[in-house]
Length: 387
Image (tube, rainbow, N blue to C red; front, top):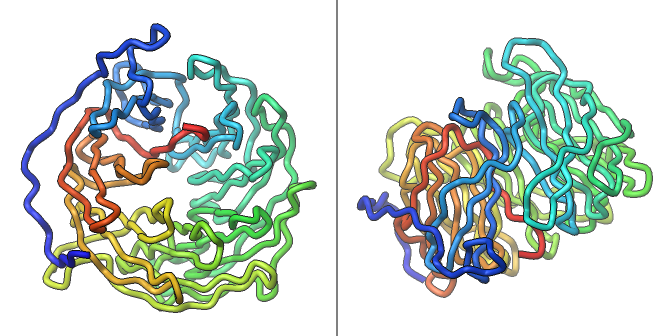
């Protein structure tokens, strides 16, 4: 496994292609991977949910708008792939509650809006659909709260089943004067929810009842971040549920935890930088993902504009830094790893591009971007189940 600790030079080898093979009149090759993107920019077609197709060479098609929705900063899919659930965030400073919007996914991949519910909090920033597909869990950044709604079979949100207001603050006078829940993730069993709260510098842990949608604080109900001023942002579990990985936005570090689902507890194992040792510029982390094999962790650097790659020790869950590969864009807000593990697809917010990095699983190496597609203010990258 080749070790790299410096930022590599990224040559502008970008292209945008549409697959030439025609399958069922779609214009896409049979093996193409659908990629759904949430965008909030003032594009000609307006903000909303877009779809691209990713071919076996890592080339992206031009974006196709599926639905218009304001503030579509994050969304998720029902496990059967027949519904998409998105947050709708009002403009910052408006003081208005956020909304949760449900869409049915039609046979051609297009979206049909089915229903909307207010989320009871301000600044929704994350949504997680339950393993059974009948609840959606939402984190609110501005108000520092979490919300759960039940979902009908067609994806429409029906009623509130849980709401919890966080309390707490930390050392940064502006960013940590109060709670800011930034994500909510369920463990592989679907019964434990972990919420990184950037403002409180804590991880809140809840037992989630899949039948009722209720949240109950675990014992203990929260744990401190690795250090004051860390700003925990996003988290992701290993496929086997033994470990959880967290990016700390404000310190540009990733923390590995041992996770016990039965006791609903987290034990910190290790915290290390997402940046090369010789980098001295500004940076903040945005997203973390575990490779489908459970062998690697990726984290996004905004400022360094790279994806950091780490190898996972299968025995104890600790990490070894491998490299930081340029994203081919600026300010990677979000990214995702394709289900086959061969590509990392990145939403570069400032450069208004979606880019693709190949990943060599055997070598543990990311390669420079092979595709770049313009899209104003891309915010979220997701792949529908079953593809």
